[in-house]
Image (cartoon, rainbow, N blue to C red; front, side, top):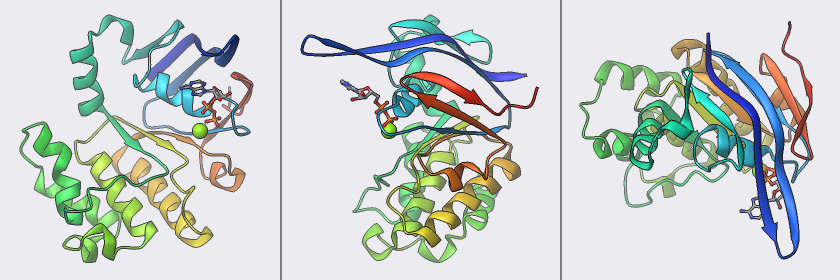
Length: 226
Ligand SMILES: Nc1ncnc2c1ncn2[C@@H]1O[C@H](COP(=O)(O)OP(=O)(O)O)[C@@H](O)[C@H]1O
Ligand SMILES: [Mg+2]
């Protein structure tokens, strides 16, 4: 079953008199529980593609389907609820709240959603991400890799169906980057979370099951085995 699909997706930006086709007619489908890497040169439209897929931005053309339903059928409020409950986001910047401990940062989305926390799930998540010893520290007392792992736990706290990651290892040194990556891979396998990861790093992409290459807003190759 395809949990996520897009058809002829388009996004244009206007800069002065010029029109930039950041995403120029992309059609793709993502299997539930799959791990896809989206690669391509800087400025090729990777981030824009991810923003459209996750409903962060509206397309100028085409459609995104989550669980078979078109995102254009959701109003703003329904879309933000869908994004909060079903989608998780990880960016290059960790974006942790500096005044809160690791654990408080992880709990934020649950508190915002006024939901009860699933203690057993959170415990497992914290174990898998190996952040037990950072839970009661402030972000300032954590390494970049530790902060990113807290950010991943926060993104997963609401048990999303899909985790979108945009250059999540971009600020990390090689070793911590590889650690974060294998943890993302583990999270994909352990919890069955569909993972769509944008990276310009080919060695990162090699950890995925599928590599989509984007150039000038178009898919130029897709390794999906047919
Ligand atoms: N908010 C925006 N306003 C204008 N142009 C944008 C905006 N976002 C992206 N672009 C342009 O769209 C193209 C694709 O950008 P982006 O999706 O960020 O690429 P990538 O993530 O692959 O580096 C680039 O030419 C970029 O300058
Ligand atoms: Mg980008």
